[in-house]
Length: 320
Length: 280
Ligand SMILES: Nc1ncnc2c1ncn2[C@@H]1O[C@H](COP(=O)(O)OP(=O)(O)OP(=O)(O)O)[C@@H](O)[C@H]1O
Ligand SMILES: [Mg+2]
Picture 1: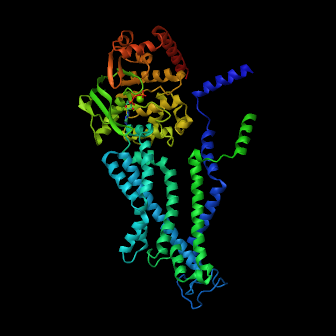
Picture 2: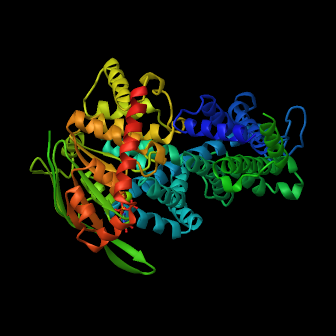
Picture 3: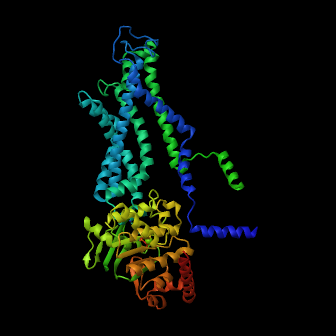
């Protein structure tokens, strides 16, 4: 036995300067996906996928959402699966177009927000000096200006708001927090030895940022993007609901506002106000589930351990 | 071949301690010269400013005052000049576990400097150079290592890749910042011998930064001892070790294992290292 042990130690010592076997890499990559594919993640992804499909395909196969009919407020029926609004518009058609509208706003705002926070956070921190101080002053100022009131002020100055304006305003008021997170991360990344080494090797600044630093920030950025979508959808719905959203567009917020104005609650027209509310809640919950699972994979502190699985694995290793 | 001269180099850092700002003189008035084929060892304890000197030479940190001269001309501070300077002056970092990007393959790490410094341009040419570099640092057969990522290499292999990367632009000055301190004791000499051999082959001017007086004595022609940002001792290796002048060096030399025994160890180890490298 003693011989066996010393022998295995000797083998280890030799192996120290030898290459680890090839399977290790494959195991590393598939482990990432295996850990990400939790029930949480699957449920979230399926719900998001269904909503996105509804927003993509729904408008193509439903009726004209704005066609007015004098049947008035009618409950769900064969001709109108989700009933009609007070002026006889098909609610299902409205819902499909609203889903498309809300998702578009959400994705675009999240993308613009991400772009702005990446620009101000990463570039500032990497270059340092006056640039960094200017950029972080700007983002701190934007951070303390309360977003929603600013949006209300801007929106009320402009006569008729296009969807684009709403998107721009939401992005401008939403990027600061993300920029601060990215700045903090970049500050520590820029002094990593491999980043310094790539500079010594002669890489240009933009390439150091894009190729050496950015990949490390992708997890943070993707979770920021997902939360950005949720935030933007909610913010847009809030603006539309209080009547300062984009004029003439269809989103979950405008549907809710219309239902409110048409006194859907008073008439008990649940088919009118419930669906958009439910979709908002479902999208928010599903995206949060996705985010939590990403977080758990990239942040070991949050990892929920499946004790039974660990025990099985250790047993297996003992046997082999 | 180029000579690198460092003149009255100083670096101050502004550090925050609690609420108040303080100036830390990390490097104070350091001057020396690196000549082709020569090795200068920079020895000192942790925090004495060795890496800061290395970073200033590698143009990663701007000196507060003082100059770095390459062949008598001041090192450029911006633009294409820096790029040209870097093709002459390269650096090997302390931690091979941190100095290679985990996202990139070994091949990528070597291709980039080859292309960036115009050593090779066509695909086939670059490939041939990469293989040659790998074999020069005793990673052979080279093509077996091309597609690997850093986590698939041992510490010693990683540091060899880092050395190959530094050699890729065909520099004439090499700064090695504690190139073996993160490696297992058993493979340190292998890497140091490799560095020494490459230096002879390329006639490189080398700055060897280390904690360790014994290897400094064995591998260098001149030893400088740094203490709290200042050079407190500077001279031929044997003088510095056997007849130390500064208090700090006396303590350092006393703390090192007994010289004679040390030498026997080094001799035995280098014989061992030679045997094993010949075996490959
Ligand atoms: N960017 C920085 N900002 C502030 N202080 C710094 C910075 N870089 C280094 N220092 C300080 O300068 C001093 C010298 O650091 P340096 O890294 O040069 O030491 P070293 O001799 O290389 O040490 P070691 O042997 O541990 O690598 C240390 O006190 C360190 O805290
Ligand atoms: Mg150091």
